[in-house]
Image (cartoon, rainbow, N blue to C red):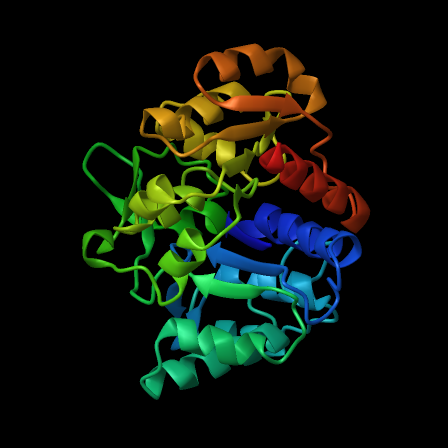
Length: 327
């Protein structure tokens, strides 16, 4: 079975980890050498240059989580991090004092930057970096091109990088719009369209619908490939009982006029039969009442437990998503 996941952020990382655990336990020879292939197409709109290094937050979050190196308490960065280099950078007045990079994390960024400076595309750089660990999944950046998300914060068109709006201001500045710079000229990274076209199942992780999944879909060619794919497309709601599971996706949804509800996000994605994204949608049991309305919009729906409290509950959610896709 070939499984392709559109993903980004902590929600995507935890969902993919659960999916890997389920695949390894439930599919034949899932631990090694099996026909089960797991590919994640990852948002790169959060990426940026800072203090001379290229940072790829979503790729790194997923890599660290699958490698067992992610700091689960903070939700980002490496286990056992120190921050001596960031302290030195602050003393020199370099970089963003509110955006702290751990020393181990900086090692990843330096390795990525060195390989990029050698002329390698991000997809090949990612392949080399992730080969350090047995991740049980292939991570593909949505594009090799630099497509960075900026946030327009006033009527005059003032904008800032998404990371500044998200990390420094904690999404407290009302967003007027999200702009992916140079997205029109971007191309899907090698392997992305193939992973979509050859998939047996396409899953949409419970990631931010606007700046994670929305950025992936904004790369020319990706949405069209999904529309033409023979595989079912099943999404997992990032909203439970009218609240975001993690982060500040509600601020992003409000900026584009979408309510913070499982039903509204399903409608935002739309039914594939009507030119949208989804064939099916998983909502939490707390949102079971939304199932009829979602199905009336042409998207099959079911209510299952969505909370990913630990690897086991994440694996159960992944199993539910795959089971629903194969019905």
